[in-house]
Amino acid sequence: MASVFLDPLMALTDTAIVGRLGTLQLGAVGLSNLIFFFSTVLFSFLLAVTTPRVASAKARGEHDEASIETAHALWLAAGLGLALCAVLWAAAPWLMLSVFNVGPEQAAQGIPHLRIRSLAAPATLILFVTNGAFRGITDTRTPLLAGFAQNSVNFALDFVLVLWLGWGVSGSATAVAVAFYVGAVAMGGMLVWRNALQPRHLLSPPPAGKCLSLVKQGMPLMACIGAVVVAIFTATNQATGLGPVPLAAHAVVRQITDFCMALMGSFSTVGQSLVAASLGKGDAAESRAVVQRLLQWGLGFGGLMSAGLLLGHAWVPGFFTQDAAVVDCASSALFVVGLTMLLAPVATTLEGTLMGSEQYPWLGGRTLASAAVAVGVLTLSSRCHWGLPGVWLGLVSLVACNGLLDGWRLLQKDSPVAPLSKVAPVEDLESVPSVESLEKAWRRDIVGGASKGDKIAAGVEPRD
Image (cartoon, rainbow, N blue to C red; front, side):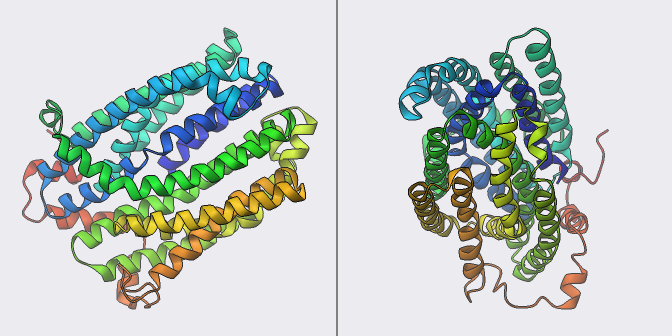
């Protein structure tokens, strides 16, 4: 969970520092970050398709094949990232002025931020792949080191470039871009160190057919993500139309919510990697036990998070801005988020289960339906003038619908965990007391008959 905690922590740091520059800068940077998010998240299918491919290869003991899968995905990520960087750099003025219709003053702050931020697109896509590879080998600890390095660089550069040298929003974008490349290099190096990636497999690009296979497998997820982007785009346009103060408040609430959802996303991360490993061994019962235990933990964790947001909704936004109007506006929207946070870890656990079992067509279809509901709520909010709380009511409805539909799917007789409604035997639940225990059990399965190199890759034998 700690490794997932680090990325939103970096975004929170940026928001808190930029908020000291003024409401105009806070809104512009928030919009720039959203545009970058819209652009890069479409390619997050790289993470989802890498994880089960690596996990299945590892479960079969085919370590070279796992390395080759990672190398091919890295080549694809680098190529797509360079193309995306060029598009964002060229289209930044059009996106700010024509698509989101911001004023010239905010555009003057947002355009340079987006252009500098776009330079990190290749690193962002590479991080999708490396994170997927680590999930595939059921290693959620090693990425912590890369995450700490990335956050430390960002934190230090934010203070130096923004507050000391006075580079403003350009300094904030530079800090993030450099930090992402530090993270990408660190993650790649650690994959090599863990013998999860062989450098020789990076020497030649993958055949076109392999790239097309990866993209084809990710197409349902791209449709799924595209539907989410449409809903978030609609919400952002509504927040922009409400004025500079609601837009700045929207940026604050988004960072707080992203932070919470990333913590909740750890349930998806663990569920995806462990379900993929269990199903790779043909053990649906173990997968079911894992999911049931994660759902139990998720409800408890979600309850704590929901209570924290409801109790702190009036004063938490004050950490990010001194503007009383922005704080008041953000507080009302954060209250809406707090009411629904209880079910967020349940939804992310169910989604991770379906990703780990490679149910991509289902994920794409259900997200299209959920996004349609969210856009409907946003349209109603606009007509009824519900303001920023209405915008966030539309956004949280997306997560709620996803969770309900995923739960229905996993309760069916043909569920990949066969089915979730079947109570796991006591011995199964006792064998899954913690994620750490499952990780150790998975490693023991690999060690049987494995070479020394395989043991090093599994993390059960140190290097010489």
